[in-house]
Length: 252
Ligand SMILES: Nc1ncnc2c1ncn2[C@@H]1O[C@H](COP(=O)(O)OP(=O)(O)OP(=O)(O)O)[C@@H](O)[C@H]1O
Ligand SMILES: [Mg+2]
Image 1 (cartoon, rainbow, N blue to C red):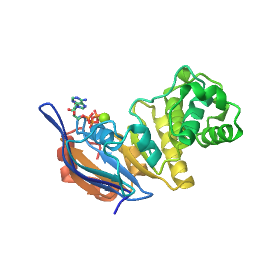
Image 2 (spheres, protein in one colour):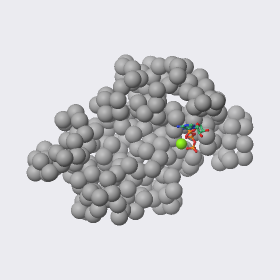
Image 3 (cartoon, rainbow, N blue to C red):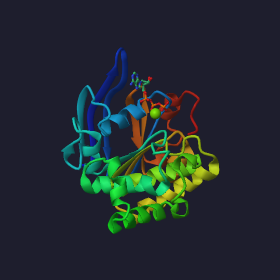
Image 4 (tube, rainbow, N blue to C red):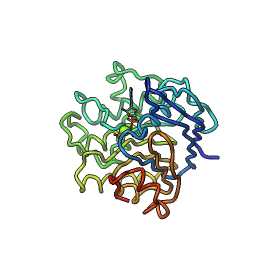
């Protein structure tokens, strides 16, 4: 039994079957990658895991509890955090303020922007935010406006915001999309460090096979909304069904 159990999940958008009959089991404290061509349904599946979409059928259980029908902040409180395909940060706040928000949001159980000033001097929140920034090597940028950060640093900041919520499961939707190779390698190192420092399960959607093979312990291949194969990285390489799914897009 995995920490995340997806059973018979399907999702339709009008006439389009975005997810067929998806079953997925993610074991605790592992890195599980979901790969597949553009439009395979990867982000749709992730959206079903974090309460952004409600599947038409099926169940999604996390740590023994259903996530379906819960609001995104309730799902955060259950221990699931998500890094989006495009970093979701507050461009007009500093790096430090961005990280403080989830620190106190987790404590108070609600997302309250107006409370930022009132917690700015609370030692436990400040200490927690500093720890999170140190974890992603961004303490030196604490007073920089988030909107002016490089793409790689925005991703790092978003990672710190997710980690502030002390997640048991971190969902990452293409965490290296649009990054140069150096930033991609930094992100791989960062994720490895996070994995070493905490009890955390990661579910990562990724097109870059270098990232997938550097991090993943299990890989699910999704094509046209249906899982084709679930395997170890060694067994995925050169798998005929994987080649078929990618139709020439493959790097496997
Ligand atoms: N809100 C929506 N309304 C209608 N169709 C949607 C919606 N969201 C996704 N789709 C469609 O569902 C299918 C799966 O999309 P999804 O974004 O899950 O793919 P993906 O595997 O994440 O692709 P990519 O690798 O390009 O990010 C696509 O055909 C997409 O156009
Ligand atoms: Mg996507």
